[in-house]
Image 1 (spheres, rainbow, N blue to C red):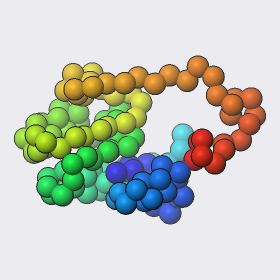
Image 2 (cartoon, rainbow, N blue to C red; image 1 turned 135 degrees about the horizontal axis):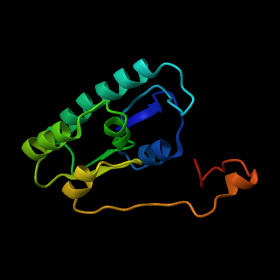
Image 3 (cartoon, rainbow, N blue to C red; image 1 turned 60 degrees about the horizontal axis):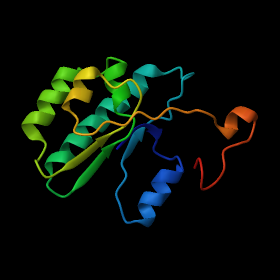
Amino acid sequence: GEFLKHEGGQWGEIRALAKLGLVAVKTGDGWTWTSKDIDETEARALHGWEIAKEKITSGAYDLVVLDEFTYLMDFGWLDTDEVLAWLRANKPEALHLIITGRGAPEALIDYADTVTHMTKIKHAYDAGIPARAGIEF
């Protein structure tokens, strides 16, 4: 699930998933750090969580990725303890769940089997080089 990227966006990772025959559900409204309608962003993200719960419990998937999901907890839109309680009670044992995003709550980190912290050291964009097809999108 894409919780913040808007439904009509042509994101590189979404195109790559489609080529692999994988399902991507986008529920965001294109939120950025300068977005004005935060209420709409929150409502759409919370709707995305409801869809994600259906996908997680459906039995139809071996892997579910909740892209940028940590923001929902970091922004206070979802209670971390409630999310973790739901996952503990409902996530099938065999399902692999990947959660991405900055600001992961400590309790989520404790719950996870594997945690990766990615830090930019240097990026071409900082030198004025625009996003490139096949690299950033």
